[in-house]
Length: 432
Ligand code: GLC
Image (cartoon, rainbow, N blue to C red):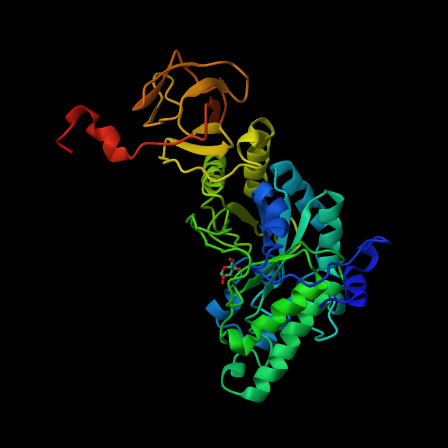
């Protein structure tokens, strides 16, 4: 049970006088889940931010382990981690321009350095050269742009002396779990209302070792409306496919890098282009999922120029075509490299990734299409339809929108597509 006292202290200044606390703290999986997830389902697109001491070196966030840097040497990076003021404002503005509705920042990555103020270690930004609570700056920045706030928190910790030996030594486990739970408590107590808790890497303990059930209970007592992911070895509220888009039968969010690294990598130039990002976003939305797209700012907080450019183009596309993404529902239609779909009610959004200008058709759409128009310009398109094929006629020769053109199709009912074998079999009836 949650008492009025814990609710008020949890929400601190954010609590409005007279608001009533809920009767009980929600659990992942309970009846409040759908309600807690609603904004997130509608939002579809978020910004992931990997930032820490590793950002100073620019050789990815696993550099400590991958280059076998001794902890005492790595700790020296804290002297050089003195980000420019206002960095978080830049990210939040970028996210807003990109059409992202929420942000998730690494408050502590595997390296163990905390970007927030904590009583439990001195290895944190406010007590080192930086001298500022970077999580506070981030939370304020996100709120100033009207974005929801998420905290990533790595359970695995390479810096904490008990972080590895906790697997074999019960005394170490108890100390370490008290540290981790204590930090989660601080994060969810000191920054007002937090919308997402994004655990990561539960090595080296199992759910019993982390006392994950107890941890989630505490989380929901402190933040009754929060949603949590599945990386503390419990199912949580949503799944987290990484670097891939795989539809899950429950709420899910695909997290992905913009190049190949999460943390800043000076030499990684394998950037996705705006079309790929839009296609991925559409494919997530089609499958009822979200897309959490990462930036890896430099140590000074600045965002690599290619990330800024790609996100700006995606954002300007979303200004014209956001209707085909936000608030859409799962669409049980097949997609290809050429085209994708999203759906809201009886409206289908056909996303054409490569505009041919001569021909365009959808196979096996059995539901009657009432009208078709280009989303960007409103121009009506003509078409012919039988149950095997919807064929557009008289298409503009050049792509009406870049990098992806969206056609809005009003259908008579919820769009249904015929099995592909039946479509193929129409000329071979009885033989397939
Ligand atoms: C993996 C990586 C980590 C990254 C995370 C993002 O768990 O270890 O570096 O933060 O993926 O999902």
